[in-house]
Image (cartoon, rainbow, N blue to C red; front, top):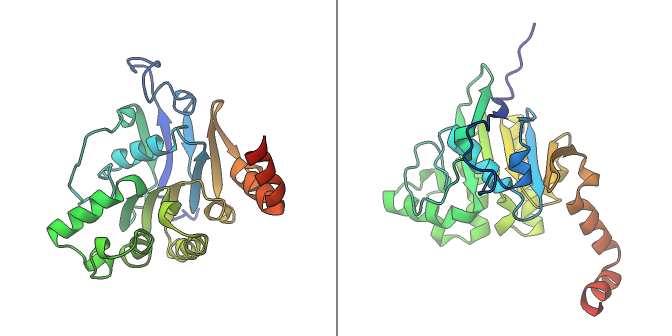
Length: 243
């Protein structure tokens, strides 16, 4: 039998028997409460859904399980601006494959400014194109991570990487992600971007008030709303602004 080199991260499973209360955050979120098992695609797994559905919370918990700083960076990045992270990781179990990634990174849009400040403080800019992330635009600094910091054969977690990227840069990011996948990398990405989630053969989990359900790209609300708007922007503007 030939064993595949990926996925590095096979799945996470929950054990909520000792959760203090399902009335408190994050266990009151339907997607978290109904989380049992998430199986990950060898290439790309997307977590999608509305604001507040729990995407970032789950990505953060996975990052903590794997030994990342919950504010972003690699496993050697040691800083904390404020401890606001949930306890979800305490009730999750991670299943890894026999292969270990040679590279890893957690890109988190929400706290990327804090990461950039930390990198300036410690003077480590070699992995970011030898230029302070604060001396680049938000979008340029995100692209610098993708093009300079990530080396391949890696496990990469991303939380809303499109936050600072124009549509054109999102397409460039998708191309860089593909290049890294061809270098035996695996991605788990929380996103709102219909451009990023178009990556072929990716596994897409939709988080909602009903829980977590695997879905197809063209069945996502992100794709359908964007398509409807672009097909008839005048009609949509009329609906949104005059009703």
